[in-house]
Length: 640
Image (cartoon, rainbow, N blue to C red; front, side, top):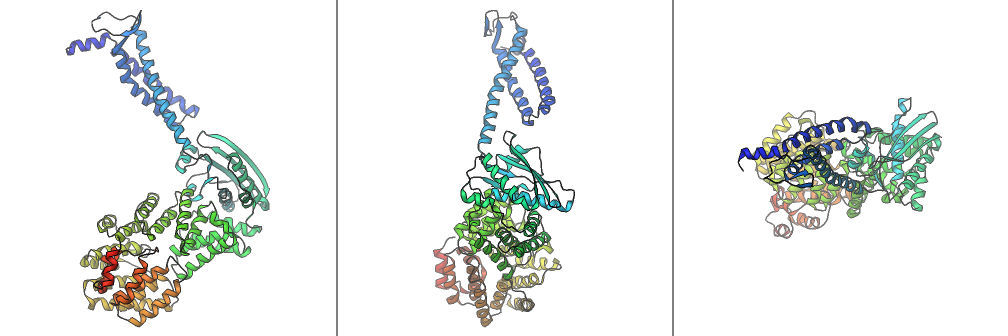
């Protein structure tokens, strides 16, 4: 068939007319869908589906128009030899269009519907997210009350093991009464959503809640409570039990008692606790300090308030990480968490992410790392958007030398906080621990720590310098340290002392001991002055014992080592790290007899930033004992 006869055949078979008619009808259908679907609150994917069906149906309609024609004898295959005009051609055009659109529509709609059904069925039916409650109080000072009530209801729901409850940290970014509940439910991995509002005036409280199945947008249950402030505990308990019943969640006798327990019978302690809960999602140092003050007030008013003690432990731990990195602050965090666990041992079995994370840190320090990891896993399921949980889980895996799993956890944290220096450093350090300098370099390359942020990113900064030292690129390391120290302004005294130690360490690794010694002496003076001023943190102790060793002061190293071991003796997570600091100090002094036995034991146990044979092989600090037979044997026997 030549080109001319082909186009003639297209015309004879009405393919042109079908194409034009299909385009017109398709355009009309799209216009109708665009205008009408929103009126009936049909989701926007419905319009996209119509467009997709029409687009896919177009070539099918043309193929049908070519292959078949409508005759008095019915539908039959077209005969190329027939040149006469087929009867009923006009009707045939519309039949082709309708058949094409309908068949394709049924096929893809079925697939799409099944896909949506599968999507919904993958979400656990007994799962719920409690969205932020709206504060309807005229007095804006009462806004904290809505946040606190939301968190208390969430806490009571979290006591039900048969119910998956998403933590408040993950729901905080959503506004109250949103319109896109289905999308929110998909993002949080739940089938149901609780919305609510709170109004407080004097000692009167109104709490309104509604439980919605977000998959099919159906209202399951709703109720409004008007109560006196002293009775709000009963409201929270009733809401939790009504939700459990509506979702057919199994409620054990112990769980029912826990839900009905008010936590405290002191209204003032409860009010202070609600103030603290309202600050949970606020970022910065000031909210942490305020939260701690409110929680101290709560436990002073009711020393048996286990929930307040638990939140105090978590908050004190945050203060340790972000404000005061001292042993005294670490002890405050641990004491609060242990008090909570003593008052309410069942907190360890709770279904609340905050409690689980706080108790897991205590378990880790008690040497129960497997239990800590299990708790952190449960916490991550309940609060998937909380980067602190993923970071802590990564740290636990890192301490156990499970490097791939640690990196996976840090990657999850980085999806929540892209580019975070601290998390990036932690991931890079796992590569260093395995001896993969290239992978670590790719992560650290081109990332600059802001000059006045070295205090907050000291780990990242140290890891950058370590990488250069492990590569034996001493000139580059020296250039970096010198330039960064020169441009940094208003650094805390401890960081200034550490910067002098950094610079001296690089000169020493390079073999320039004449330049290194004055820097070590300066760092030693600064560190001792800080100790006289009351500084007792572990970073100071670790740095001072190392500086003493680099200055060859054996007696000072012995004395500092004894003090450091006594300070951390009851902390199974930190005590081995102190032993490693001491082993390093004796290695710098060239004493393999004191260093190697410590290292031999450390390579067999998990602990914070546990050492590896790769570190022993790469770090210049171990050079003074590198030829010792015992040290060589350690490196040969261990992997990585």
